[in-house]
Image (cartoon, rainbow, N blue to C red; front, top):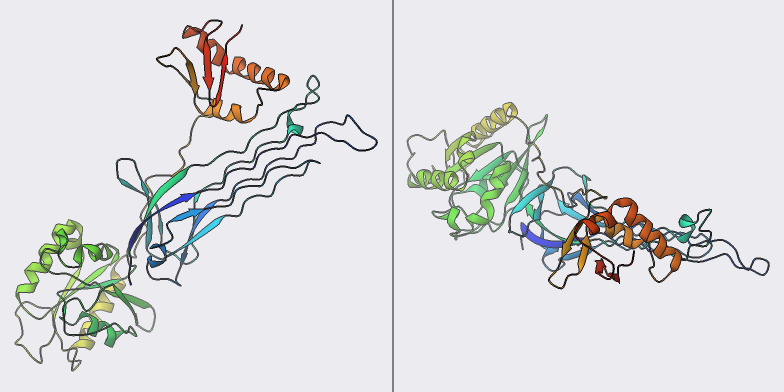
Length: 404
């Protein structure tokens, strides 16, 4: 089975929580803070490989999550970092971000063996209470929670990496041509859609190799989903040269029309028009080459022309990313909203990060929290919005009544 487009979800590991503890032993009963830091969550990494040629492994495994970082422990023992999750994809795989509107924005184009793309970074580990000790606050009874990461949806789309694309109707001889000029062993038969997925073969020129791909399923209406064409037309986008193989004159206009309607850029690619089966049919006027895959007549001349044209064409280039998964944010940003019940809600990266590092039930931690709100301008902004003593303030999961 062949699969060339799939949607999956990915999630980096959460950061481990920092620990709150104090040094205690037979000699020391009131030691200082010694809580360890939480470990960093694991990353999500895509890696290119030649060991697979399509995305069938993703048919049943759709969710990928990296390991969470371990929590900190007493005795200044830090938690271990979470292990990354490595997702291996075939060369030619494009990774897209799926937006809420259903759009697909390119994140990365995997073109080389062992090429890595770190799609998501693991959440940072929380700091242990050791980090919050000061001259005035020597026994901080709180630590920082690890950063919780989000789940993202990405689309993987495979586009064959080939120098030459063989196009044409089913049964015109594309697979046979591929089998005799390369070591490819495609399934060949005299019935519609013998080829159910792109077949790849390598033509050894003596100095360099040229990759050929047999693109299946092109018939009239392919660009609209008729037959198999809509599933495989995208694979032609990577090719540098098209070899259009026909055995009937009517096929020329039909295939050209399908290519142009799918993408106008396809018609700009260099093309060789070759008629196959000249041992059975009369020659069609206007073709560049006349061949018979059955007798190999004219095949060598066509191979020479393919080599000549490919060698002077520019190499396949990697598509440039247009988006990232994790959006850079201002860590000091916050926003205040007043709901229908008169509750002042403070939201934004600044308070999200701040609330991780406090325990409001602890007096010292609550005082630290208040000072940070004051220093960052949150309290001044709340008062500007009209907050007075006795009003309710909501910050993340914490809700409290304001007192001056």
